[in-house]
Length: 317
Image (cartoon, rainbow, N blue to C red; front, top):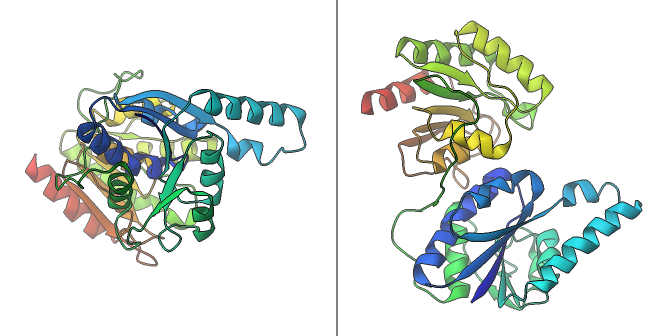
């Protein structure tokens, strides 16, 4: 059977879909799987040995330039690539109208969430097969249940297996280091700078060099200030795959509710997720290592709360 998984964005959502792939490969020997994803996140499914081909699209870029000829040429090339593959089934794990429409470009039966289960109920109109999955489950569990329902195997009772095989770091990391991820896509998600410095100092006292990650010029400025306050280090700009190499060898990770924090947890690193503008219940930090989520909507975690969780993780090591 040849399967196309559609999970295009965002980074954390792509990470949360990986255990469904691992389940399917274990239950269906010989299954061939491709993955359709936004180009900036293409490195994530590529790190899973079970993905044969990653098909990157740039819809976030294209939708802002639909009057340009080269945009339509790029869209046409992506559609042609999907049609040439001749899939037996397309599984839309996203449940959005945009993901359903892209799934339909493959000219194969499309399976997805029932209207009451999808994030956008209208998406179910475009599916040939629908399955109901409770909406009050963690994102990882929802993806696993949807894949099991449409591919016809019993839902495994085993913990989620993200299946990632990270590359070696491109950046020469310190011998013993921990990672701080203080940047996020929205200002509402941010945690006070002084608290990051305090966490970094505690890690330094434990013998770990704090490594502060960033992804834009403004984020680099904040990362350098935090690193300067706790004798940490700031790497150069790293692509997603290169960042995975750094995360995979960290002794522990403390990060905001961002894709890289979820990726670190999926790589089996001890991880603490700090939530300042979102409830962690349906998208909390998940992984095979010691993980914890703290905070919530309108509940900015206190410094003492995060340090207590860090102490517990350091003690467990």
